[in-house]
Length: 276
Image (tube, rainbow, N blue to C red; front, side, top):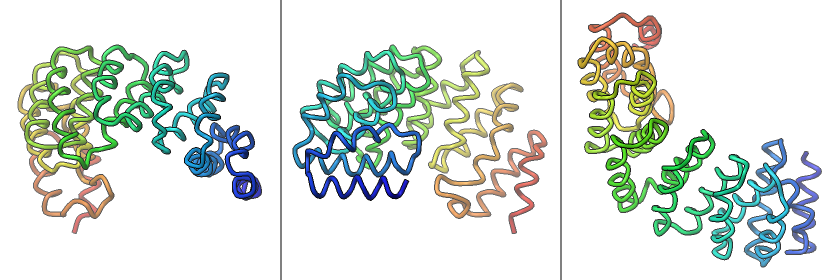
C-alpha cells in the first residue's frame, strides 16, 4: 500500500494534472488508507486543473469509484461539478447517491439546503439518509446554517415518513439547542411506533447537548413504553461525543440516579462502577 501511495504522489509531482488517470482508480479502493491518500492527491490535482477530466471520467465510473470521484470533487469545492453531483442524485447505486448529496452541499453550500431536503424527503435507503445527515451536519459550526436547517427539520418532523423523521431527529439532536430538543421530545412523546420512538430517543442519547438528559427523563414519564426505551438507551449519556472525559462524574450520577429510580438497568450499574 505504501509503495502505491508514494507512486501516486510522485506521479502527481512529475505529471501534474496528467497523473489523474493513474490516481482516479484508487478513489474507490477498498482499503481506506489508499482511498484516503488518493483523495488527497486527487484534490490537489483538481485544484491544478484536473477537475474537468475527473468529471469526464465520472460519466463511465461505477459504484465505489464513482462515489470516490464525487467526494474528491466536493473536497476540492470544484464548482463546475455541481451539475454532475445533482444529476448523480438519481444514480442507481445508493453509495453513489450518498456521495452525490454530500457533494451538492459541499460545493453549493446553503443555497442547496432545499435540494438536500427535497432529496431527503423522497429517499428511502439508509445510505441516502446518511449522506443527507453528513451534508447537513457538515456546517454545524455556522449558527446561520444551523438555524435554517433546524427550522426546516422541525417543520417536517411530525408529518414526514418514519425514515425521514428519524433522520431529521438525528440532525436536530446533533445540533442541540432548546428548541431542537423540544421538537424531538414532542415527536417522541406522541409517536405510536416503537421503532420510531427508539430512534427519536437514540437521537437524544447521542446528542452532544447535555440538555438532552432532562428531555429523556421527561419522555420516560409519558408511558411504560417510553420509560423502557429511555432506560435501555440511557447508558449512552455516560460518554460524550469526544469520549469519557466529556461528561462530569457528578452529571453522570445525577442522570443515572434519576433513571434507576424508574427502572433497574444492569449496563448503567456496571458503568457506574467506574465512577469515583
